Amino acid sequence: MIHLTYGGSTAKRSKNCPGWVAASEGIPRRPAGHAARMGSLHHEVQEICRKTGTVPADHIGLVYTEDGETLVFTEDELELSETAYAAVDEMLDLYEMDDLVVEPFVQLVPGKVGGSVDLLGVNTAKNTVLINDYKFGSHRVDATGNDQHFLYAAAAIADPQTSKYFDNDTKIVFAITQPKARREAYMWETDVGAVMAYKAQFLAAIETDIVRSGEHCKFCPAEAFCQVRKQTIFADNLLGKDLRENLQQAADMVEAAEAWVKAVHEEVFMQMSRGVPIAGWKLVERDKHLAWVDKDAAADYMIGKRLPKRDIFKTTIITPTQAKKLIKQRGNKVDLTNHVVKPKGESTSAPHSDPRPGIELGENPDNLTALVSKSS
Image 1 (tube, one colour):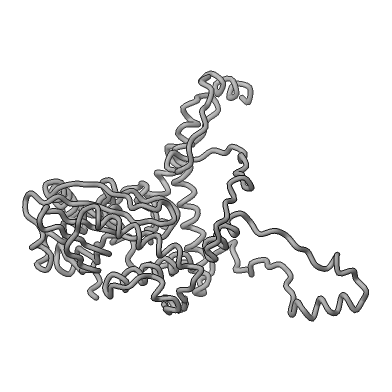
Image 2 (cartoon, rainbow, N blue to C red):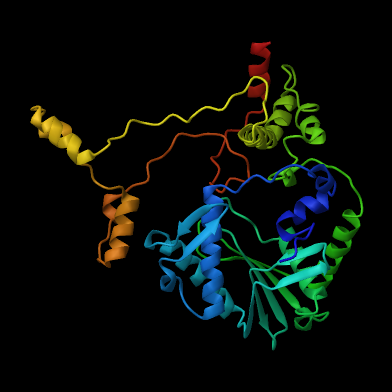
């Protein structure tokens, strides 16, 4: 497949910080983590199912390899893939899609801008096109005004292989299928006019080399090295002791600072793994708990030394989540409603992007001023 400079996964970054491409030249790509590769495995299963008219259960045992790691699609992973498959089925039924195109590679600017759409659905009679993208992480991705979808839609309209599905009045549906976050797909409707406006904005942006800092910096190869990113996080957000507004400024920078620190840690590790020395840092082995060489042999040995069995062996009940999975697997009609409870956790701070509901706070803005005054 052709490697394009600007793709769907980097669309938001490219629109807001087109200079990231030049800034990232020569920086090695960070390998995907295990969780990302597991997402790719599920993506592979969904793609095969839609191309062959099969279901996820038909592919137990499928082997997938990425970056040297070999993964196997097992029954433990089946529920997640089945949830994604069912969510897409419901969506296709809702919009009465009569044609599916799986993984079309579409280009807005040949050789430069475009990418592969996970699933493109078409309802010819109702002049509707659906663009679906699979996400297998837990952090919710919103379909509303999604840059990746806008870029794919613009590319699909421009590309000869898919342009036939669009005219000026076509309704376009953006969809995110994310089974770890929601059983149903996230959907948002727009039109060709909005897509054309986005196209113009995007193409104008990538003609420049402007570097801007923001939430789009996440996963940028150059984040750990970017002076603009570092200056934006620290230069104008210093916490003072007299003004309450300073705490608000510091709170606003927390997510960006944490993301930047994580990016620096990852880059330091990767460079040192390649033999690049970083002053003040070293590679160490992660701490591991002691493990038995052979559990049965160890148990027999301790029993032989007259250690009581009741002290050697411990039996605990499985967790409620494990119990629910066991019940589903065996098809038992068991209702655990009266036997489980979700304890109330301790409160903690979290940004508004966190999906958990917020706890109501008492309104007393002077409390912070008083606290700062006492500490000064």
